[in-house]
Length: 111
Length: 115
Image (cartoon, rainbow over all chains, first blue to last red):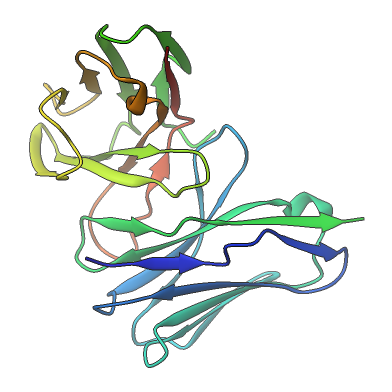
């Protein structure tokens, strides 16, 4: 079965710095990969998607990269703000129906 | 607010009781998912509906769990004879299709505590 690993340690960074979160997977390559944000007690909210034939996607202060050779995606938040503090989840989709989520990385941006 | 609602938001029950949760997806979405999320973990897939048909079920879904979507709109998830290990957040999500552009929209979840 697919195993998805994200930074196991919580990430604390200073406001204004770039946060980089990692998502590593084993076994088969997904058709696409998504990143979500989850705040405490709430459902995940979709942020960005990258397909297997894409290397990089950007949206405002967010950037996602996808390396199918390394079986890894990196999620970057530039010019981080305290409001970016949350748990960030990656999800892999192989076919259209099933999403496999990582354990999430907790990010705290310190003012 | 994503447009997906779940009820109740919190449920406390005693071991052995039955519980039922409801999910109302975005009205034009014909795909509906149920997930379970425990503390410190990501959501785990439980089951998937396309309209009223339950097309996929996870091996995690024991016989005590049943889900329905009778008219292809709202869905219910029932857990019979609850166990303490069932304590988790139960999340519902909907999407309009299965293409890569079809985003999943999650509800706020139902937090279940089994005493």
